[in-house]
Image 1 (cartoon, rainbow, N blue to C red):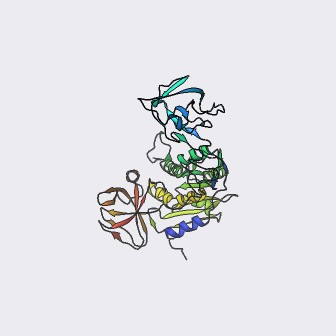
Image 2 (cartoon, one colour):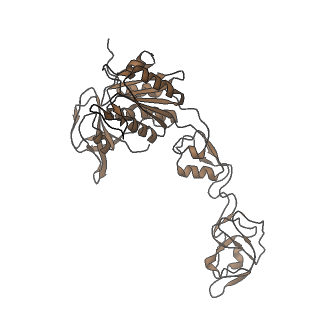
Image 3 (cartoon, rainbow, N blue to C red):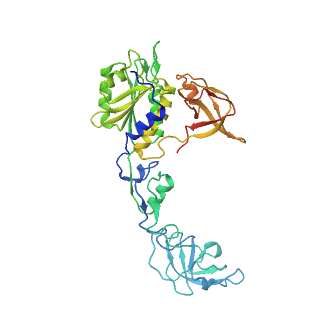
Length: 410
């Protein structure tokens, strides 16, 4: 009995449940941008670590300058100078001042900093024309972060500001997972590399660039192998060569029912890769399983570019996010008002290319181009996919629909 098409949700669940996040280990801060941290990070130092000056000026006792004004300035002897990173251990006696630079530690006995602008910038003796409140222009130790504070929580996706904070509290490394290494292989004897001449029956290989870029945008380290001809031996050798550097493999083409579907022919005999149909348009033929001694996950996507990209978004992206330990695995949908009607086939989840935007009425989405899975020009002008459920034969203009925003980080 022939197996019927799998539902999209069934295959996604099968994929995600078969994978586990890559092992985490301490990694340099320069390598973890965009990756989730795999530990709670606690500050081992306070920020600032000591009381320091927020201004270039003079460290003083507030009581000594309380009466200062332009009409009756206070004159104080300058008994030293402190600069950031080259500070001597000074103590301030009553009735004196110390020249101090921004970031330098405030000397013992001082409880305010008078900025240069309130003075004559004297060297041996300074004239102060304005009073400073107690604590003025002093950054207190631990004011930003105290030693022992939780500064980054487990699971936080690290952005530039997190990395700046981690470095500021002295962390050179943080536990995280490596970026998944993804190998992308395009199959097809008709394919040619961009920049080379085309024959009368050949086309340029756009898929490997499309899929490599999509994987890289998702956070992976990508190796684009390029073109493999419609030959089982060539494909098998190329795949075997690449498994040593792969956490995940993506192929495109060779998964339908034709005489030259070499991916299916090469892998089906292994018994570890499922090939079948999914109740989705575009992207009906799919393959997923594991290959090699290390059981590397492999995704065998259709060869038409729109089908390949929609399949990546639907099935490969959740896998990559699972390997990275990112949640949610799948792109969360939005709701938007449909501007033009869409027809659909009952029993298939329709993924319609569209443009998403907002106006005074809220979010709206407009279908782009036709249903053809080869129409990459329409795909390039889209920034969203409208999801039409399997039970629906279509949706009308003005209806609220489910939308996946393709360029949105999550």
